[in-house]
Image (cartoon, rainbow over all chains, first blue to last red; front, side):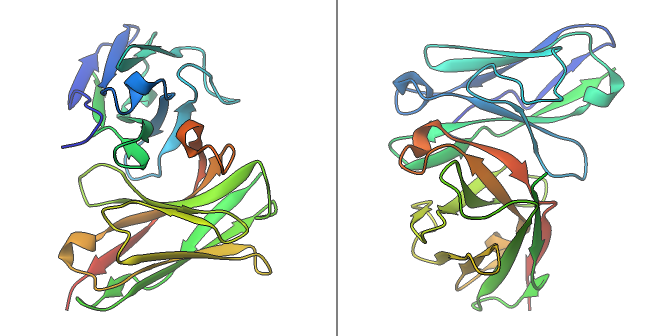
Length: 111
Length: 125
């Protein structure tokens, strides 16, 4: 099991809004460490989607947004498009494991 | 635009050592704003951080892999390397190198902002 828990899958129709949760604990997100999100399109390397909970790198559409509260974080995707179909990973730092940790990934299906 | 490219054998025999190199182009490997890391992804599974290296040669390792992993940097060639000893089938994965944005002294607050395309390494006889 991953230290950060994500739902295995979510789905939505084009144009809809979906959210992906990332649940941690007091040794990672709950300590105040930031959460970062990555998008992995099929057969490609992960790509940074959000950093420091909600900041978008240049080129990432504002349809992608993030938030963090307590021991959890979430990624929201509004105005779903077919090209958003991918696996999304959250990442933070864990003091007990002394290193970066990832969620197990959430596969987004655009219906 | 910084780019990273992994290279190395795609097949390693069990009990032997996996060796990969990541060449960094489009920018210097020497930086106080970035450092460098390795992440792996077994087929059909999630991501696992292996370790990180600063241009000075300082390293952080995943405790679960620390006894078998060595990461080093060669600033003259603008590249860094990964070695994993005594490999087993469980080490079969796509190995990614990445740039890590943030201060070396504060790994708790950093993220992977550039990734290589990844290279599949299979541990099999």
